[in-house]
Length: 233
Image (cartoon, rainbow, N blue to C red; front, side, top):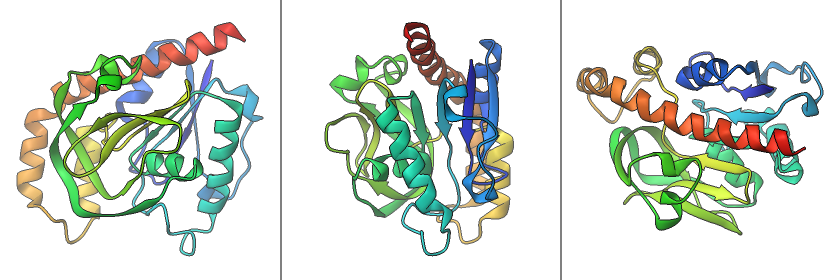
């Protein structure tokens, strides 16, 4: 089975998720609507889709016109019930495609913030592989409402942190895929961070191995779902 990775920037890519997918014997193909190129293969050539983060915001259609195309693409994935997992911006875009509002948060989350699973989250096949309470690496200035018909799987005092829509679509606001190299790139690229860059990098260096273990578990749960769906077709 091949996974499609929808990316929104050179430094916001599959991270440890790519490792898990390949270790399970599957392919991973990257594509971006910003490249203004069609899908390399028909959509039904892929068994599941991962939608990663990006520096842009989900409501910036005027600055990034291809976001309108991505909205329609994600709506199509939801209509097809294809397994899809959105991360950070990807989660916001997935929520938006399901007609939920997206908006700036009152308090940006950049760094490490506590997240708690809901009761539904502890029973979820993807999020339920994580501890009930954990510190998650975050990098977002926007949030979203829970789409109609979706189930909130995780939250904290700032916003919804994860949801499931139906039995095939998930969104997580935090970054379970991120590597230390990616964090270093983001710190270097972004100006005017709301936190001290040196302190953030030092804390992330200390925490990243444990965090990558949790990220791999979450991804493995999603791969399990995708494998079951493919086997049942």
